[in-house]
Every structure is written in C-alpha cells, then in structure tokens.
Image 1 (spheres, rainbow, N blue to C red):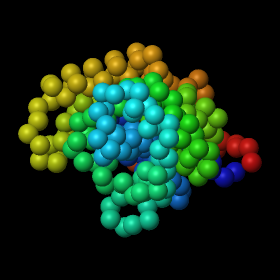
Image 2 (cartoon, helix red, strand yellow):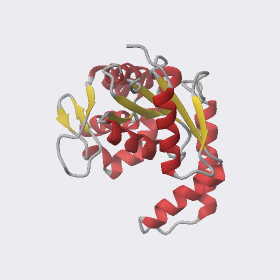
Image 3 (cartoon, rainbow, N blue to C red):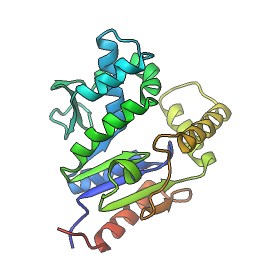
Image 4 (cartoon, rainbow, N blue to C red):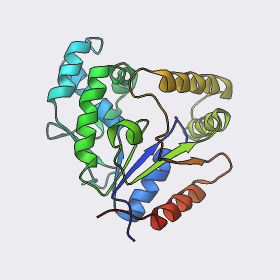
Length: 230
C-alpha cells in the first residue's frame, strides 16, 4: 500500500516529535524538516544585514522576499538537513547564540508566519517529507496524507528536557524548566495566529508511558495500514 507522501507531525515542546520524525525520515529515505529552522534563517538574515529584530515591518519584508530552502543533507558534518537563504548555506549559522536570543521575537510576527507558511508549503508539497512543527496539520499542510499529534504530560516533557540539558553538562534544576514549559504551552495554545491544536483527522499519540521506539513503531504500523491516493 506504500507510505504517506507527506507527514505532518505536531505537538507541544519536548513531546518527542523531532526525534521521532528524524528516525522515521531516516528509515523511509524522506526529508526531515523542522519548520523552526525557517524562523531561525530569517532571524539570521536580519541580524546579518544589521536590522533590528524589533522592526516588525522590515523583518516581515525579509520573510516575504528571502527564499529559504531546506533539503536533505549534502555534507556529512552532523547536520540533519541543508538550510539555504537565497542560495547560501546557513545550516550552522542559524544555530549561533545571537539567533537563539532573538528568534522567538521574529517567530511571533503574524506577517513572518504567513510568509514562511507559504515557503513551508512549497517544500512540503514536493513530497517524501516529514514536517515537524506546531501548526503543520492545521495550517501549513492540511492536505497531508498522515497527521500525527504527539502529546505527553507537561511534567513528563519537563523531565525529558531537564535530563537532556543535564546530559549536555548544564547546571539546571527541574522546577524552573517545568514552569517555563507551562508558560510556553499557554502561549502556543492561546496565540491568535496558528495556535497549537490537533487537526480533526490527526492521530493523537500520548507518549507518557512509551519509549521513542514504541512511538516510532506505532506510527509505522498506522502508516502502512492506511490507504493513500496516488
């Protein structure tokens, strides 16, 4: 019966969607596309050109005119994909600290989200893609063949993030991470533009008591049983 041509994978922070999507994309030979990199790319371009990220009009104009592309990795240097801004490889530049510090401001602008949704659709409609975000199944690619919405309790997601940061050698405590996660959930689910919610036809998977591999296997089972249009 084949596999879904386009997969939308949404969910709150630390729900495991990126890890699961990457594993599936590797197994299926698909493009793994975390849409957050587009907001990082526009943030990097703005900073590189000396724009203030507080200048909503200028940053929105950049999102409307700069071509962002995401492709399968062309270099074996640990990257999950190539990120190109007007043809320039910015895959690692968008991970710089100054981008980390400013991307949330850029991603909140409605005009930026609208412009980048158009670019995300351009890439997603090529097919053979697993696209990860918070509004893929509802806004970016509502026609996706398979929509998955991963959930887990906020306590479990905070625990995962806490352990992840400990593994990186960071000096962190659990309570602030939990509070930050709750705040992020509220912002994501109540924002006016593309709020976090499951599409009506999404498969909702609660990963609280599941390993990553169990989640992957469940999605693969669903994907292989479902019938898709050519």
